[in-house]
Image 1 (cartoon, rainbow, N blue to C red):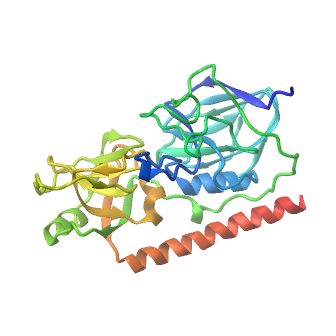
Image 2 (cartoon, rainbow, N blue to C red; image 1 turned 45 degrees about the vertical axis):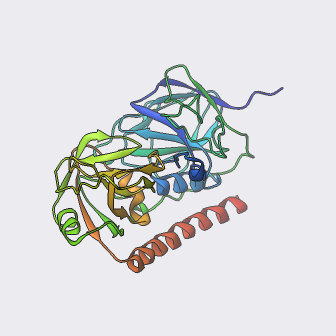
Image 3 (cartoon, helix red, strand yellow; image 1 turned 135 degrees about the horizontal axis):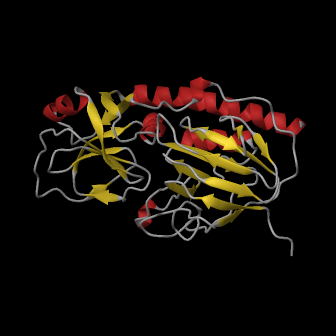
Length: 318
């Protein structure tokens, strides 16, 4: 039996996990998961002709060092991480050939929090509820449900060799990164005029309590206390207001239900930006209408599909 191509993790980085497009099992109480910056995930996969939801590595703040044991075509998209292939620079936002024996080292980033590394063929990993995404709290998916550690070995499926395009993704499609960001939000039935004024006016600071489950803001706003409130569904992007008054912006790994007041939800078009928040960033919440949020999402989706179609056309003729 022929072994699939593989790489070895020489340095795991701060938090590197296998992620894909996430799960659709929230009705079972399973968090959605998946890459926190889905735009970076889609573009990285498109650059190497993977399906948009193929599994790759999500890199957080400090990246890994990966030694390849077979030739591979890879791309790294997201926050502007410094990366090197052996002793040379490694460009982001384009497809790059990595030869067997070479080491890709990803270091830190001056802005943003995450990037997505795609390998042509898609990374293998434990599939649970239709996704290979790592759920760190439930400890399933990806590689034993945990972050990478030194000595891990990852493999991927073999696809026919191709000539990669010389194209790169333009900056207009890069997910915005800090330190100053604005997130468009929608009011929920729990929003009152006082809560809207408190949340949508000031600038907040991202606290040190930030992970794949949620980002807690540092400033305090008046929090309503309602002991009769029942637990309600939590979508990614929900803005919770716990009793201490420090808002929490939920991310991909958030639980499916919660008991805190949720007066706002981040518009879907800005969920990738939410996934790039890091401690110390300053963020403002700007209320928009549902129509405006949908229009912005449609514009971004048209642009993304245009790039995906152009890259697919290139590979069909390569």
